[in-house]
Picture 1 (cartoon, one colour):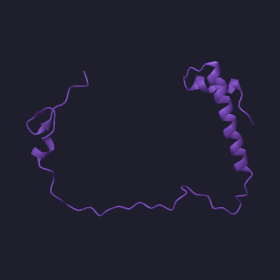
Picture 2 (picture 1 turned 90 degrees about the vertical axis):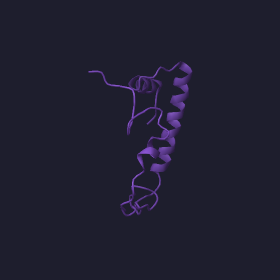
Picture 3 (picture 1 turned 45 degrees about the horizontal axis):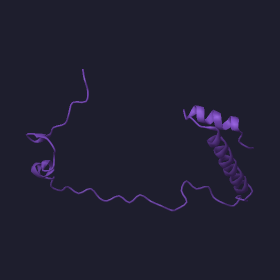
Picture 4 (picture 1 turned 180 degrees about the vertical axis):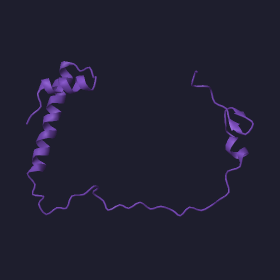
Length: 96
């Protein structure tokens, strides 16, 4: 399987990208190199290899929830560019 200039143009169109002739030639060559490499990988015998979702054996490490005092309102608002009482004041972004 190889990628043609027509394929690159179709992909660029689907991605709504504008490409010139130089880029089309470059991307065609690069995509074909990627497919050649994938073909090399397809040649490898993986019959005895267990499928993995991740190459490293990682586990989520969660800390235990502990009740702690909250940040005081004064500290939370200390660097606020604008505030109103105990609240952050932000510009209106939704018009009715």
